[in-house]
Image 1 (cartoon, rainbow, N blue to C red):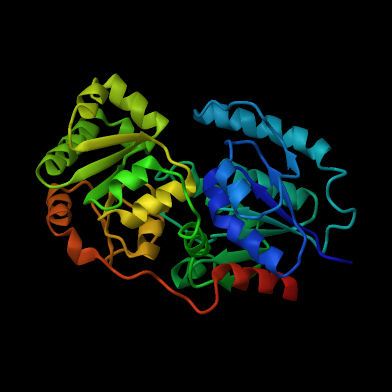
Image 2 (image 1 turned 30 degrees about the vertical axis):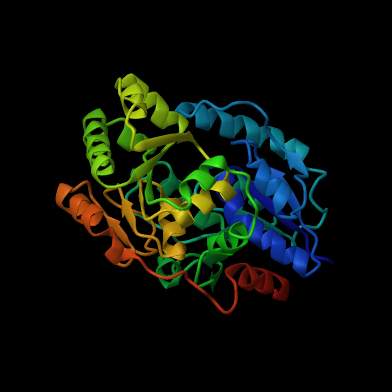
Length: 364
């Protein structure tokens, strides 16, 4: 029986990592279907500009309360409804079929549970990442632990992550690099209509992203970090501040938003779509961020990256282009004053991670 291949996608961050696998399936003439959980609205640009299949079914279209209770409530409600909606969606005999999930969101857990209930082989893309702290990041670290127990095929982006799942059941595949690398290579060749990119691309600027809940809840730390960034920007170069919704709300609450917007050296913008942001990151001198995906992106670009976290579940670039600040002023100041020394080259590979995954699935 022909193998069925299904992708379970909940967020744009997940879609960014799996669309290259879909593109590889397209190249090899292999059919697949996409299930969207509805956890977040997916980036329209990626859906329209990558040549991937349209979404076959969306399980939820309701807004989600981002509190722990809100996420759990949405998870249970959507999971129960999906069991009825997906009954006729999957092939009757699913033993030869795969359900691909990515990462560490509540949708990743939902997809893995659904895969098990319908007897599909669960394939975890970006398996094996660990911070070894259940509460940092929370609930992502717990999500990964749960999914690892439900996974049949662990697709690990490097040797370190492979070792982290060596005691788990199932097949392990070392893709050597993350599928994000394939996405970046594609993104750099996509034309974007961006006035901001046109304005900044020939200037010296850096990108600042500060959006994790554990950082925003600590107002004293947030004030200190923003003051440091503003002072550096005044004396050195333009700062492009990405205002995620939680960031904007936290700055408003702290009465900082309007003050920051008045700074001549600060350019603020709402969150970008994927392709525009990759163009900007590639043009920037460096990035200061608390985002795990930004750490990976900067690694593949060879871009200097200061990570505003105490620990990270990713090891890409650490000690090379990326420095973990642990909120130590000495580390932060040193990076800002010597960011050029962390510049590296773009990572290149002979066989793409996405092709390794597809070839492995088709050979089983």
